Image 1: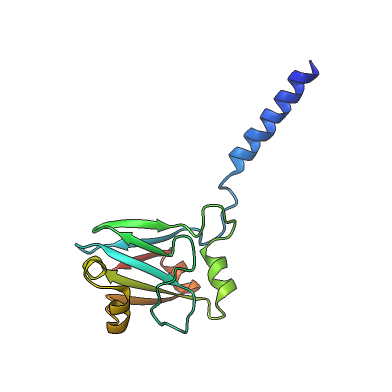
Image 2: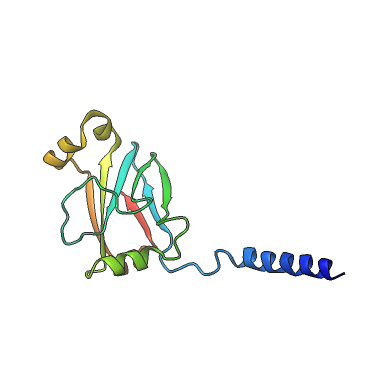
Length: 143
C-alpha cells in the first residue's frame, strides 16, 4: 500500500511539473521575423549596439536564421534558457537595443561572408530598442 502511495505521489508531482512548463515565460520570449519578400533572407541578430559592425559570430542559439519567402520564423533565445529576449537585450546592452541584419538569400549563395562584410551587402539593418520591439509585439517585418 505504501508503494502505491509513493508511486501515486511521484506521478502527481511529475504531472504538476509538466503542466507548469511554459507558464513562467519571460516577457519578450518570442521574437518573430516575418519575411514578406519573394526571396529567402538571412537574419543575423547582434547585441553590440551602438557598434553596428556586421560580424559573422552569432551571439546566441538562434541569432542567425534563414527565413523563407512569404513566411515567418520565431527565434528562440535558447530552448533551455529561463530568460527571454528582453532579458538578454537589457543584460548585454546598456542601450537596450539589438541590431538585426537582413541579407538576401542569393547574396549568401554567391559571396563569401568576407565579401558581404567588405561591400556591406545588407538589404536592411534594424536597430530596435526593447520599447520598439514591445510596440511591434516582438514581430519584425521585412520589408
